[in-house]
Image (cartoon, rainbow, N blue to C red; front, side, top):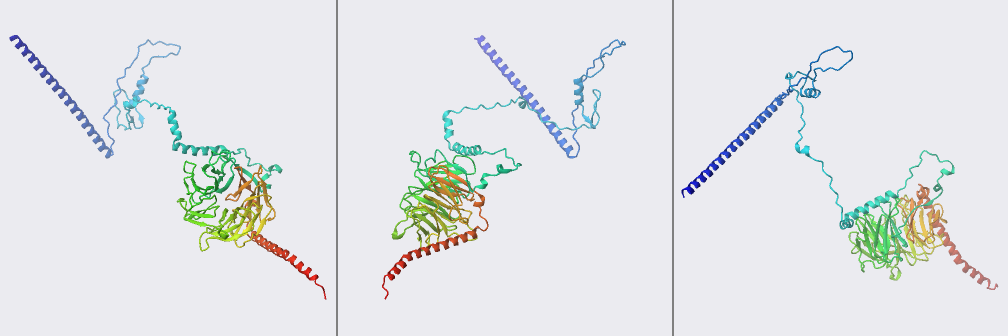
Length: 603
């Protein structure tokens, strides 16, 4: 029992001794730590005082004195004792020298004083003020150990990810834009060997085109979209003169393709594909650029709807369309025209049931105005063509299926048909108003073409044609005044012939003619805004662009006066013809009266 008690006391003493030793160890560690922190604080304070002193000296214009000295280490001198003997040959001897590496370090360790480097014996400091130099920032250990970044590995996309990217709208927009740019670049062909210093000698230097007035420039055809489709209308962009929009009829050989197609062609580049492709569910009978909206294209369909496309949208179908209702058109729309100004303009449309509608491009859900064009006995006019005189937005001229031409107005007391012009023996296929503004006003003149093989010149002031051009031997499908020449117009017929008429030169035969390759039926003709090119569309879906000679396309200063004389001569000839007809009609009756008088016996 006593032994157990004694053993327990010994254990407690040992434990108490261990606790005391642990406390003593912790106290010593704390004291050591306090001493180290005090040393660090003292060093920091000394450094701060030194910086303050240097800043004060710098403000007084005195360069701070560096307390550091560069004392080179003790240099070991090595020499050897040797018996000197005279030798006849030149030998190398051991001499007292500095080690090369040590000498170099020594030179670098001495400061530059007075512009040169002093070399002093070891242990002797140079006199004078030291020169202060900028010190490059220290390179940290992390920067030294920094390794160059490894290029990131490119992960291979899965088929599903690739398909998602291809079908995304951004990728489709990028592909559509870049493909057009690449096509333009690939289609350009430039002769880099053109010699501008060469001389044109003899007939070899003569340009064949200098003797021509009309020659083929290029053609537009898309095997996928325009094959076996008839060109129904064409129009040029007012903002981008190189862009041509053409509408096409349905292709009976491709029942699964859309019935209506509109293609935008670019005449500036040599690319053979359309700039834009649009389609709808009904054949497009007429199309036009929205004059004051460069991105919008309008189309009139065979079903009676008017459709609107936007080339900024990544879709080929219309973004808007008019309803098929009694308030709008329910018959084919062959005529579309945007009239007005930038701030007040409307779309005018006329269908074959004689209904004219005025639309706002901002709202195609219903027309702003509607007017029924009726002839005698309140019979609707089957309108086939439309033309507005130059600068007029109220009065217009229309051609009909019965061969009669009408003038009408949109507003006023006499809104509707105002005059009737009779002269054609068949349906009117085209109407074109005089489009050139000059010193003399010819805006009252207009041309019409018909399947009666004739082209007629009219004036809004007279009900009978001023002149009839009867040079064609087939259906004449379209006619168009030149936009720059007052007396020049173009016409196309079913035999594939394009005629240019300059009335100041001749009124009996065309000034220039050309037959399109293959003799297709030419349905439409249109001038470029510059008047230097004329385009024709045929019944197989091909568009031909012809260049017109400048001496024929550009008018001279006296062309307006000449055309005034020509116009007067045509009126005089018309009056003479009417007088001759009256004389012929009165001739037989006078002869009958004379014969009756001769039968009376003389008393």
